[in-house]
Length: 174
Image 1 (tube, rainbow, N blue to C red):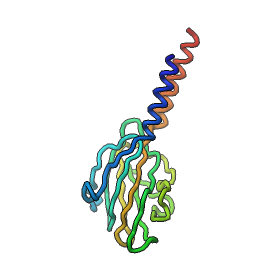
Image 2: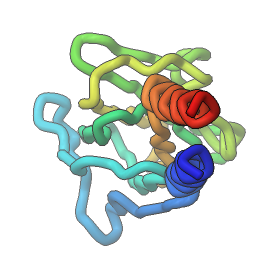
Image 3: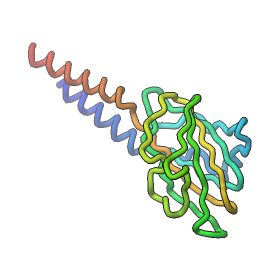
């Protein structure tokens, strides 16, 4: 009974974490993201699941966000990229946390060819719940949408699984 309860709770937490979606920032609705690296726009604490940010980048756009306790960035998917001047123009992304910075593989460049891909290329979590992202546009203005996927931290899932196993073992001994 207890094992079934833990298994149900685990499954519900996992499904909720991967199924929820929220538009966190849309420059067309919420206003421009900061173009000053020293004073990025704070978009708040993200939720588990999908968190969408849409930006029109000309020069630089900078923003910060926090992760909920017990979570990590699973991936950052480039959902859309449009550059009206040229479909081959590109933008770079820099992800930073504390003093650690990830400039993704291939010099951090993303463009229309990367739509649908994880643009942090499976880089490991930086271990700090506070992050910043900077987009830098190399050509003309681009409009892009990223999806920051927040997942439960592996350690949190491990503790939940260990607790469920302990309950099962205790139940069998009783």
